[in-house]
Image 1 (cartoon, rainbow, N blue to C red):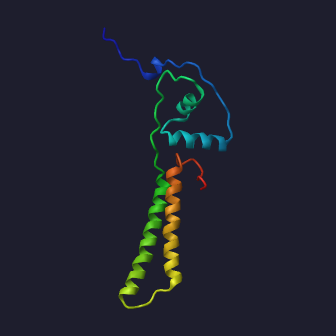
Image 2 (cartoon, one colour; image 1 turned 90 degrees about the horizontal axis):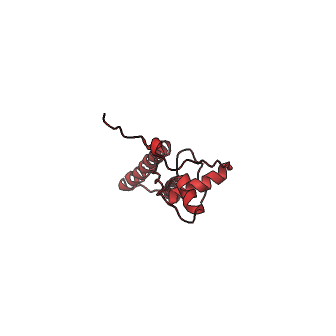
Length: 131
């Protein structure tokens, strides 16, 4: 009879579970710190608490926030359209007001801030990190 390979759960060495309740903001901080180390929250906690970690924790895969990325893409398109209109006006010999140029610059800066916040966020389910 051929021996079948056991699943990962059948070969678990860690058999004890520790349940800890935390506030949402505490979990967000743990998730942020774990993501910064490219680790899952349990692996991060194990590494922080134990003097010597005997087994290697699994690394968390970065998750893309599709909704946020689509919103940022839409904002990029809007900014690109504004800049294109400004360039067209200048090419036609027309003037562009300083307030319109400042508004376009501010749009780019806001987009930059949002992208940086999105990069700091571990997952779609987490609220925005405030800089």
